[in-house]
Amino acid sequence: MATGYKPLGVTGLNRQGGKIYEEFLTELRGIKWHRAVREMSEQDEMIGAVLFAIEMMLRQVDWTVEPFSEDVQDVERAEFVDECLYDMADTWDDTLSEILTMLPWGFAPLEVVMKRRPDRRIGWHSWSIRSQDTVDEWVWNNMGGVAGFWQVAPPDYKRVFIPIEKLLLFRTTSRKGSPEGRSILRNAYRSWYFKKNIQNVEGIGIERDLAGLLKLTAPGRVLASDATDDEVAIYNRLVEIGTAVKNDEQAFLLLPSDRDENGNLFFDATLMSTGGTRQFDTNQIIQRYDQRIAMTVLADFILLGHEKVGSFSLSSDKTNLFSTALSAWLDSIGEVINRFAIPKLIQLNGWPIDRLPRVVHGDIERVSMAELADYVSKLTGTVIQPDDDLERYMRQQADLPAPGTPRKPPAPAVPPGQDDNPDDNQDGNDDDVNDNADDAQMAAMVQAAARILARGW
Image (cartoon, rainbow, N blue to C red):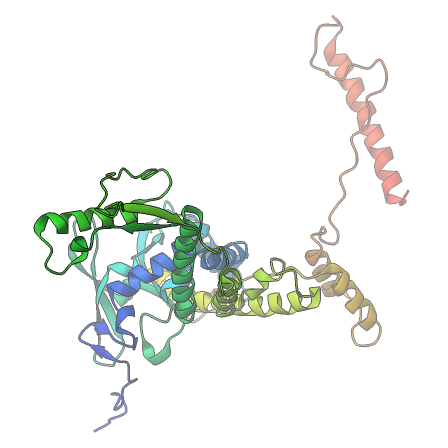
């Protein structure tokens, strides 16, 4: 009996039932981690800037569909896939924005919804996100792969099973075969946690420095352990006063003027000033944590200008490394589309799946034309020889027209005294005769201009 069709080992993914427990910190599991991701991505300035930079750079990349070959049928299928990609209910940019939510969450499940096109072919209606925090439970098959997941989501909170055949599952990593990948914010959590607490303490300290520290004195009975209910009420009221004294919340105190037998006030309040200095520079500490947060996704080049340090070459090296990481994420997105979305689309339309088109992405960064021209000029005649392909590539990088594109001749000037509107009948002349003469004269001028341009004048 053959045993090679069934796996003997497992990936080692720590899961129980439909829940995954790979996170060793219990406070970062389940709904607690969902709240942390939302707070980090929506509240922190540095994390928000990094995610914004990543999304904007990835959304400006061009996506094209390449045919399997130059055969007419292969080109036709590639054009069909390209039409379907840009004919969905949501724009491709919006769909890509939903796919990129895999970065903060680690994964992005999108349900594929099909439609019947006007040409009677089957196309994509939409790739709709299924929010990560609505995934209630994962389901695995007998081979250890993901079979789908149960979703519980508003507004009706019904439990719905979505099979993997209906999904495009985008992940940052497939470590241990985990369907939830790994958030790019996970390594930044510790720095974000300390930064947030330091910012809170800093805000409290600034408020105390500006408002001063209130000193309250009261009879000893108010602080005694056997105080009466009335004395406890006085103590609680003094605590409320001490914690509420700040500008625009409680601007003054009203205290009794009764004194004891020695002439001392029963109650007294004094506003104590502070030294105004701190042993630690919180601004420098927060900047350090910001740098570490950006470093976790290779985006620390964002801080080069703010810190007033760093050379251009250092910035260029860091951005090149960052672009390489972004390109790898785009590669993973393209692979999911090419492996799961396109084959099903081609098969549903009755075409063979052995000659599939592929979705490919363009470059993230534009090539420096000065550097490219210098590089090509140094190699021309020795390593490389000028040819049509090289010229076509150089023109493409410089956004120049393709070779052989006819130049549009400039519009000839209207001679003095000639009506520039042949259809204007206000002069009372026969416009048909004038129009014919004008057309002949204009044709002669265009031909003369073309001859001049052809001679290179």
